[in-house]
Figure 1 (cartoon, protein in one colour):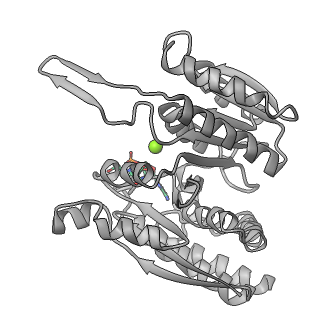
Figure 2 (spheres, protein in one colour):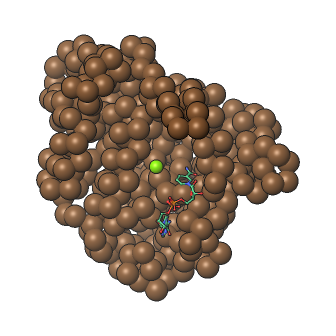
Length: 336
Ligand code: NAI
Ligand code: MG
């Protein structure tokens, strides 16, 4: 039997609520499916631990992630930038993979949307090199050939692995000549190594428009850091909202899977957060661990559940977070 140690970081706000739901579903999968053994180690990060210990990301948490086979992170609040950005950079999780798939039956989801945003996760405008005076501010945007080629290879290899047909490089090279220019050169060069995959380029503003008007035309979007962040929230709107959008932060050694959403303070503590994004992130984790069958089974079950409900309020229903988890767990038990 395959055994895995999974680092679990519930964090703040709705984080612990969606994590509890996710772990309940994983527990049911482990029991029903048989071939899987998961050991969870809980770690702290976010606003709460900062208030207690003075740091939002304790070294112990980083060590815990490194000692595990993979990690699940729910959400941090105001300290999100002090948690997830250092995790990405210090563990070199250079690929941020954000699939946007419209499941049938989800209110607000646009039929036919099935795209994946592959976002460069370590540089760009997120390097944190900034200056500030009383009446001016500067943020440095850094692009390197190494990081650009690495993320481009990741996108094309993902396309090959998943049988996808097209990679769209998203840029603003007409204005940001130095940084986006270099990014685009890297993408073009790498594209030549993958003649079987169609390659196109699109300005980020045109891409934002097309994402709203003809999203079914997209397959894999390859983006610098900030553009991928923005476009993935837009993509979430096409599939029923942030409660439906999972993601993975993936490197060559480590990976941390998390919903795209944050701590949602406006609904925290009420038990009504949609746990789907967290559960689908766990399914991405299983796939990354090589547990493709278990990941497929989980996604099929989520898809079946979404067609019948009951769903949480963000999807027009009246169910609670744990109602959804219990419902999915029940379907898992029925399926095996
Ligand atoms: P948010 O994603 O927390 O919430 C945006 C809106 O979507 C809210 O109306 C919220 O209720 C709704 N929403 C989000 N997830 C949902 C779910 N699972 N089910 C139902 N509704 C959901 O983003 P916002 O409001 O911009 O930020 C809130 C806090 O989260 C901030 O403190 C921010 O720093 C943090 N944040 C953390 C992130 C992370 O941990 N990676 C990412 C984004 C924001
Ligand atoms: Mg974001």
